[in-house]
Amino acid sequence: MKNEQKIIRVGLLGFGKIGRALAEEVMAAPNAELVFIQDPFAEDAGLAPMVRQSEESWYEKADLILECATADVLKGEIETILSHCDLMMFSVTAFSDASFEQKALALCEQYGSHIYLPHGAILGLDGIFDGRSLIHSVTIETTKNPASLSRTDTERTVLYEGPTREACRLFPRNVNVHAAVALAGIGFERTVSRIVADPAVHTNTHIITVEGEGIRFRLDISSFASGGVTGAYTPVSARGSLRRLLGGSGAYSFV
Image (tube, rainbow, N blue to C red):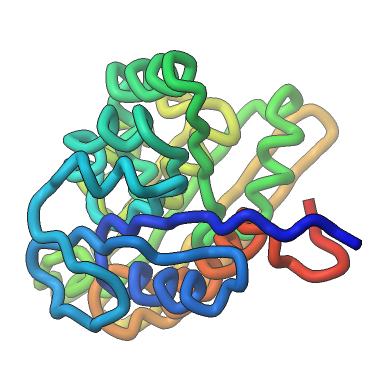
């Protein structure tokens, strides 16, 4: 007989579209318990205690924090989180700040904590990571409706083209895909980002081109944006990442 599964206590940082999907996944998991939700603005859904301001006592109750707030919120909470629990983070643009990345890695070593990076809206991130020693160049072009970028452009406009690190600074809520690809591949300086506003589209589209020694990948990913900056696929993907992390993937899993 198998040993009884340990219950993983989960805290949720941010309760928007992705946060709500993750909360549902935790509630459905037989080996997880949602112990708190931290969000200063979200409506209380009655799923777990709603924390409006950061309180370390809540983090002490958790084994895992699911962050789906903003890079700035994550930066403010990172030491409190990693001193008590592991972290699955969706605001990957935070790692474009080299000092924050160094701090996070040092905290993991100090406290024995672990950071999980979900693939989010990206297909093929594992292939980029596995092939990073062969890769020479990576380009990512993201096209969104201007409203998703908090803009009012009336014609197709290239807003930025250059190193991904600067794209993360300029569009921190819109380029988590770029940050994840840069981390998995050749870094924030060598990865090239292109951000396009197009009033004719109603999807979030990411075209990722990877070239290297004996390889060439082209990933074309499109997801309908049903309001805000998050596409329809991302919450589904987030639930899948959490399911695998909790160990509830079924008889087999893709690694």
